[in-house]
Structure formats: structure tokens, C-alpha cells
Length: 76
Image (tube, rainbow, N blue to C red; front, side, top):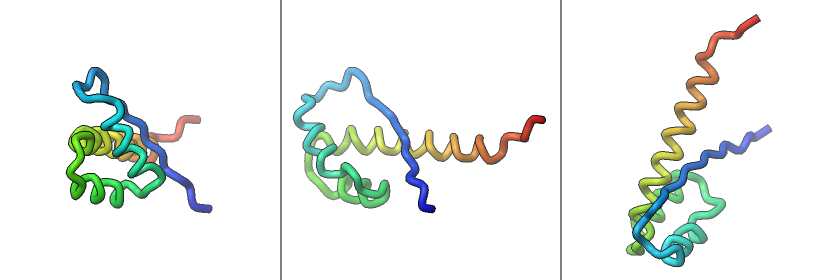
């Protein structure tokens, strides 16, 4: 079974209008992380720069959670 990996990150107090970021969010919603990053890197929208940072952080946290869960010793 193909498990869908979900990561979550947020940026608070961003000095950009929510409408500009919403355009980018709608563009990448449902896409694979690599595809979404490629789209954002090649799209000249104001919200892309912010969303790239947030997406990288979410991927970093997801990788850290996966490595922590696999390397944790089993307790009996």
C-alpha cells in the first residue's frame, strides 16, 4: 500500500498579503514535493519565495521525523 507522507509547516507574521500566497498554494496543492518546488522556483510570483522556504522546512521536519522513528530503539 502506498502511504502518503504529509508534513506541515507554517510561517507567522509574514509581510505579504494572503491573496498572493493563496495563488501559489492553489498552484502546488496536491503535487509531489519535488514537482511543487520546481514549479515555485520557475514562477515569478511574490508568494513563491516565501512558500519555498516553508516547503523546505516542512520537508526537513518530515525527514527528521522519519529518521527519528526508524532509529528509535524498541522498548519492551
